[in-house]
Length: 242
Image 1 (cartoon, rainbow, N blue to C red):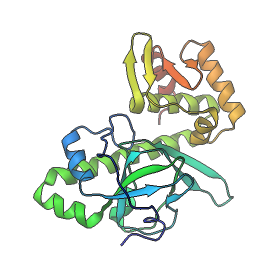
Image 2 (tube, rainbow, N blue to C red; image 1 turned 135 degrees about the vertical axis):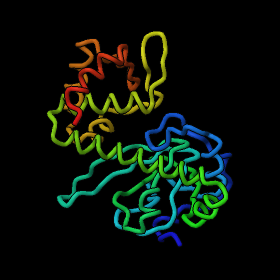
Image 3 (tube, one colour; image 1 turned 90 degrees about the vertical axis):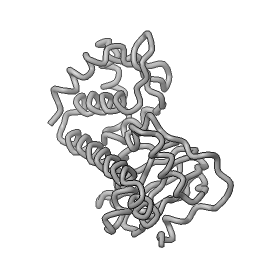
């Protein structure tokens, strides 16, 4: 059974489960498989500020976001936090620790009222015996998370300019949509949110983003970020890749 924190949401009506084409937590290659996984879930509603799960808790559930926005973060021994990512509609969260049986390595909290589907490990394994492609999809999702962690590990040892370039490259891959003036990010982040994702201050994030804007690598309109030349940004980020 899920832990007290994992199942803290309130039951209720939920819309048909979305399938993300933008989140680094999903990037579904076969939407029909994602829909089959979502159909195994139980409806849960989490209010703004309510935890979906806490670091250190145990659970055999993972989640798919139907609506809302959630923050996934690590709590450090010194009391600081490191944001791993933000989950939007269609994103899957909590898969790794659902299957390895170990305590959650991060916490997940709703930033706004959010609707999720809670999917049990047993439901996925039973469905996977009938349709093995479901298990392939779960393996792919967990592999995507490993790539996300690799980015964070790589970024920790970099100067601020390298962290920002690497993060923007990651966001373009995960959320980018091509338009005539360049690649737009489908989701919008505040400076504080961007800074928390790479462990720098808001002032540092603002300075380094302004530098990329001055160099013509990024265009910023309020919270909207546009990358006019993805190859040029990736050339900069590539200098810092492990």
